[in-house]
Image 1 (cartoon, rainbow, N blue to C red):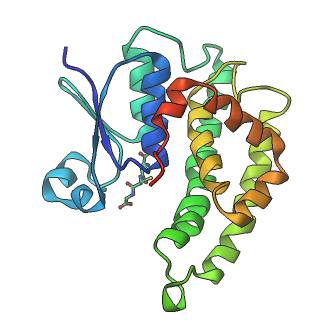
Image 2: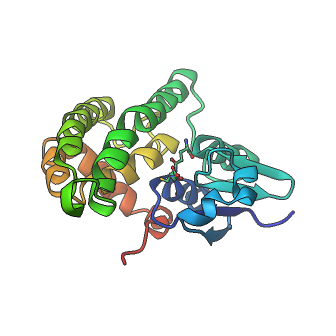
Length: 211
Ligand SMILES: N[C@@H](CCC(=O)N[C@@H](CS)C(=O)NCC(=O)O)C(=O)O
């Protein structure tokens, strides 16, 4: 069988999640870095209808959507399990993944972090109106996630799961900017979760490199 290959933007939180899942599972893989223009070519759009990253290729298996990629690596390979076996805990893991995808990524990345990278405000500055609307949404979701974590080290089943791998990169991105840092100061358990993840070489090695 060929070596699995993940393709995507090196700076993407979803790519970080997918690569961390492979690393922590102990599955060797290749990574093909691409940039935004390459994700919108006809060839890539044939591979991913929405032109997003990451995608996974493994022999005859071609997948997109980070949850699908993480679920595949966890069930197709031997190694540390990244999903709880107990049904309610498995469902809790999916609940947290869905919270991260639906209620954290859009305000935190699309409407907050990206304003500092591709500003849409006057004279090329970050658009304050967009940011000011995003911040309370980010704060609400961080509060819900902090409560979901409770007194546990991980979100589900007392073990590191795919849920932690989705939330960790988003917490890291929020914490890169001043107001986000402030929001995270109110949610110390999420900061400690990120610290525990960064202690895992497989998570740390998948993080975007500065520069
Ligand atoms: N639902 C997708 C979302 C992937 C996604 O939004 N990736 C971003 C990078 S973090 C992307 O490709 N953005 C480029 C674009 O939207 O054109 C998944 O789970 O993989």
